[in-house]
Length: 485
Image 1 (cartoon, rainbow, N blue to C red):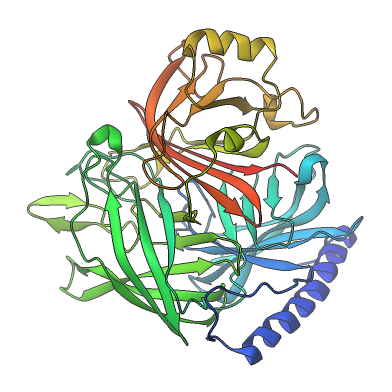
Image 2: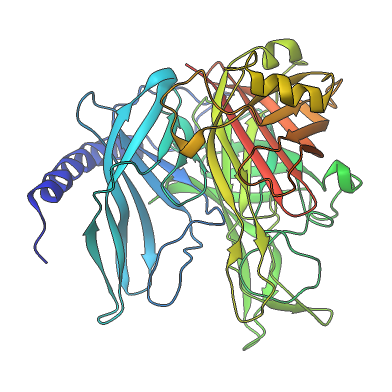
């Protein structure tokens, strides 16, 4: 196929930067895993940087008749001034050996550290020959954004038409001779009612993991997870999830970086031929950043359990499609300092699960760029504050009209997060409340309302982070916030 000059120039730039990245990864490969320090040593990273990202429900890639790509991805970003690029890559697709770039484009660094992504090239399916081909887009404004930590150890990304995904630069294996404790939240997938039929990944918050903690240590390539504690949402009773409290994984160099593969606790019996298939979770841990990301290998495969047809999950650390976690603070946080900072991030509504057994897609999901504490004096915040009443430890913010953050001081004030009166443990807030304003685009009730949530807070590269998970009467909601630069 003939490519335009614009597209070829983009490919040449990406190819050159991929070569530089290969040299960086080779240096890490020679250095190897393991060591004797209690924390991972920070390594100066040159652009471009490749990040590991778990599958998040709503990520689509049209290949043949399938509209969903339930696999982890990598994102490569180069912040070079005036010549920045990004790409999204998948591995092991049907009939496509090796890697496959799904989306690519140019990158510019905006205010407060926000990365503005312009999607210029994407791959779609050619059903006639069952092979992917390249198409170009020339839409003037396709909202796509990323937040990168200052030293490129992690962040968040949201491409046009896709949900937000957490990013971690897994540039080396964990090097923890002394256990490090992480607190985590499930990355939600569409809501389901326990025991209902249907395909695709889904999450039952009344019975499956919402949050938890784990102690991680390592010796060479062996990574040990101990004291795995998992709980359902406090609004559903906060009951502990029974299961194995420990697991062992192996870390090594992969297409996603230095990833720890953990054999799943669940052993799934394929209802077709009786084959035993152990689930595999993939865990990436940022070097000295305090960030953990897990893809739980949610396949959407239906299994029969006690006469019910359900979609299983690998609960090594979480349910849904994976886990996002923070290093547990060594002492109680100053909640006033946490809520006093300004944040950029994303609000993700996982939607509802289509219960038609013949369909495997979800509907109603949303994902929007957001900021908090930028517009606390706006009339919108005053209106929402009148609805919420006094907050114990709260911040106000919301999305941007048409996802256009042209003016960083005027995001819609249609969300509030109240962490509650006290921490359950260092950095853990199990009595949080989320308020959704009547003007939020995905709010179909016509009025402001609230729902209970759980939140974890901590620091990533000396910047505050707040991750929130809750469920209203229709769907799960996740909010990921990073302190603004």
